[in-house]
Image (tube, rainbow, N blue to C red; front, side, top):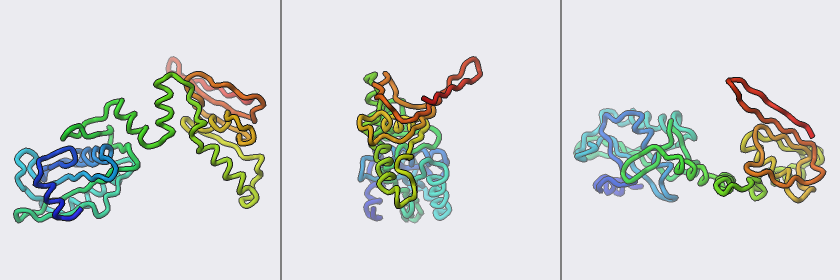
Length: 256
C-alpha cells in the first residue's frame, strides 16, 4: 500500500477495515485491533490502524517517538499474539499536518484464528470478542479437516476422517521411501493425540486394508459421534482415554 493510498484511507470515514487511535492507545487495544483485522479480512484485503489520530474527531495528534512505537507494535504482534502476526515493513510513518502518524497495515491471514487472550473479529467498525459460532467458523476456515468435523458434529454424524487424507498420505510416503530412509515398510504406524487421534482413526479404519498403518495408537481421541463399523483383522491398536470424577482422574488403556 503506497503512502498516497494510506492518506486516502486516512481521509475516509472509519469503516470495517480502517481504524484510528490516539497516541495514548494501550498495548491491549493495539493487539485487539491487529488480531481482529487478521481474523476478519477477506483474502487479498488489508486493514489499517492509524495511531496518532483522535478517535472521535479525526484530528491529527501525532506520536512522540514513531520509531519506538513501530518497534513496540511489531513486538506485540509477534510475541503477544498466537500464531504470531509478522508485520515486517507494514508499519509506516506518515507526516500529516507537521506531525508523525504511524500506519499499521494488517494483511488477511492464512493462519487464523489468532489469539491475544480472547479471539476478536470485526463487526461494523468495532473489534469485538468472537462468539462461539464465529470462533467455530474461524477454526473451520483454517483447515478442511476441522470444517468436516464441525459439519458432521452438527448433524450428529460419525466423524471419521477418511476424507482428510493427511494420515493416509503420510503412511504412503514413508512406505514409498522405506528403503531410502532405512525403515521397514511393514512397521510404519500412527500415533495421535486428540485431533491427531481422529486422523489416526481415519487411517486405521479405512476400507483399503493395504493402506492401513501397521499399528496405531489413539490417545484421548478417535471417531466422534456414533461409532463407525469396525473392519475385521485390524492391526495392533492401542486406545487410551480418561474421565474426571469427584476431583480425581481415572484412565483406561486397551491393547486389542
